[in-house]
View 1 (cartoon, one colour):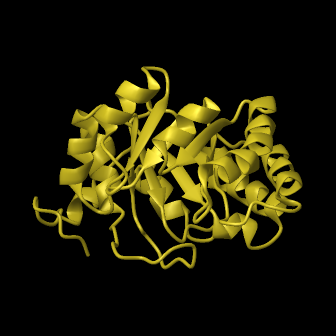
View 2 (cartoon, rainbow, N blue to C red):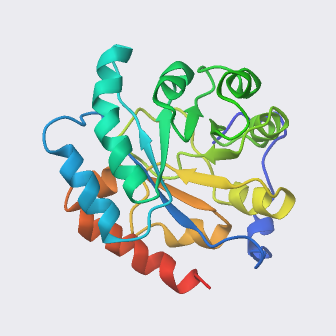
Length: 229
């Protein structure tokens, strides 16, 4: 459940939802594991070569910015070679230092307006909005380029404090043009309802890096491919 001050959505909203054909088809958005050392650059290359990926989010914790930059640079180059957007999690300063394509902000990571001032008009800014329409509208008003809803399913990637219902994706897609990202425990086996509900992107981590990354990306591609074109 969510503590959205706007209250719960009518579940029947999803029943009558039909995705606007003018919206681009749902795409895959990869999030890194916390450990990107060792052979991870090779794993990332394998994943990106296995199927369509729109963006890759660099998400590491408990390292200083110099170390984070050293870890990020080869991954950023791999993404650039394949025309995959390179997004930095949490840190506006690291995104600026790297010249990243974007930054993803949690609710405690700063304001989208401030990030825009620092990073400029071309950088993509995403904001975590949990299961809250109120937070999503605030993010849109602050100039975010996308909003992220979740967690939709249990996940081991991070501690889940907020749960979201797929109907919020339907509502967002019907009311706003800004892309909506679904996140949290998403696998090829459980993703279809989120796509049907109106997700513009599926943000995934454990389902890819917890096993054969190339096979997982191919499985997501098989799920998303019928909805392309």
